[in-house]
Image (cartoon, rainbow, N blue to C red; front, side, top):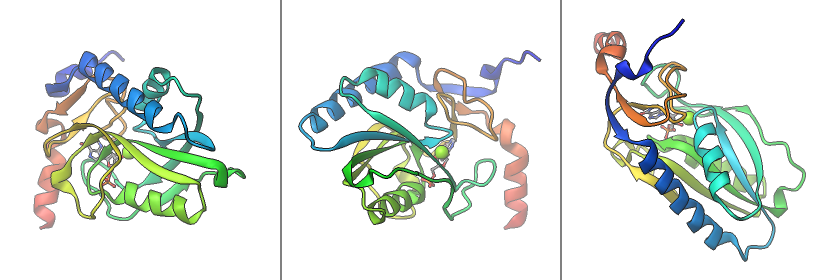
Length: 195
Ligand code: IMP
Ligand code: MG
């Protein structure tokens, strides 16, 4: 049953302390930006990867918030994105016109998930929408999208931990680390063979 997940991590990219410090800065920025805003502030967690980040962010904030959840699938399995965004769990609120929503994401890669979700929420008639991501991989962008709040800009490497997974594993690691390529070597071979 016991397995040391850390041994699958090639190197730690962001330590617990670095993340904590940055989350506190983001929380302070959001508090400042919204303290005079009319309407409700809603932190919208995109399941499952953003659970850890959002829990820490809301605890570090001083403004009162509502929380809500949506689930989308854009990544398919493993390290490859499927390209299309599908809503698996929707937002069911009757007060959307009163809501200032901040979409909380773990990472932006192609940009498809956040660009699709922001457009979707605007069409639903929310009062305002902004986006907050812990990690940004700008090199991988396929659609033009700039989040409002970014924790860290990182290079194009597959990372896990602090909520982020590889095939549902590693989410519980308290830091963000680069996964050893040997862990997904089989997938890389399949990818090469498909080309
Ligand atoms: P996008 O729609 O391509 O921007 O994809 C964003 C989603 O892809 C994130 O919410 C993650 O679920 C997933 N993702 C992208 N890069 C990574 C990574 O390095 N590790 C884990 N998940 C990732
Ligand atoms: Mg995700």
